[in-house]
Length: 246
Image (tube, rainbow, N blue to C red; front, top):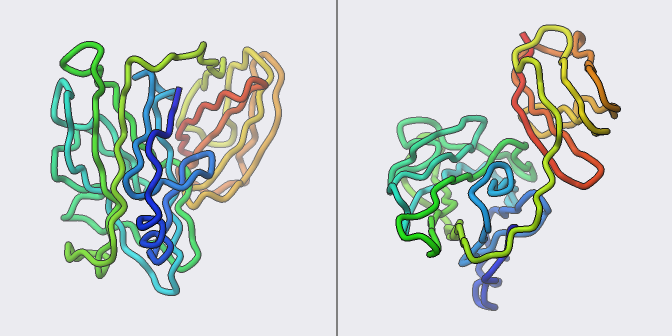
C-alpha cells in the first residue's frame, strides 16, 4: 500500500510553480517539496516508487538526485535508485545519482524522462514496528558535468511504515524465459496480460495482449538496444522488466 502523507503548503506551491521542473509518480501525481510517500511493505514491486521528471523551462536542465538522510534504517545505504538509464545499488549518504563524477541527467525543454527511473528499499528497519525514513532531493546544476547547484531543490521522504494495512497485493503471473533476445521475446503467461514495450526515452514501441500459455512477441524489426517491458493484468497489477535486443 502506498500513501501520500504530507502535501506542500501554499508557500511551497508558489515556489514549485516557479520551478524549472516537475516530478511525478507513475500515477501522474506531482511529488511536491516536503511530501512523504509511505509504503506498507518492503516487497518489490509494491514498494517501488517510479518517477518522471519534466523540464518546464525553455532551456536544457541538468538533474541529479541526492540522498540526504535516513532514520531507523538497518544499514545507512539506500538499496536501489535508478535515474538516467542507469541503476545504482548501495547508495551512500550524501551521494548523488548519477554520481558526481559522471554526467548529470540532461532533459530538453518540454521533455519528460522515460520509464525505468525508481526508488526501492527492502530495509525493514533496525527497530521493529517503527518507520524507516529515507530523504532525497531532486537538484539542478548549471551544466551536465558541474556540481554547482542552481534553482530550488525538491525534497521528499520515501518511508516504510509497517503499521500501514497492506491489502492482498496482486502480482502479474508471468515469467520471461530470457531478458537478452534477438528476434523474439518468449514468456510463460499464466493469466491474460497486456504487454507494452518502451524504449528508454519512454516511447511506446510495441504492444500486444496475450492469453495463457507459452507466448512470444516478435521484435526482429527493432534496433539493438535496451528496452523496458511493462506487463498489466486484469486486476491492475503491473510488472516491469528490462530486456536487451541484440
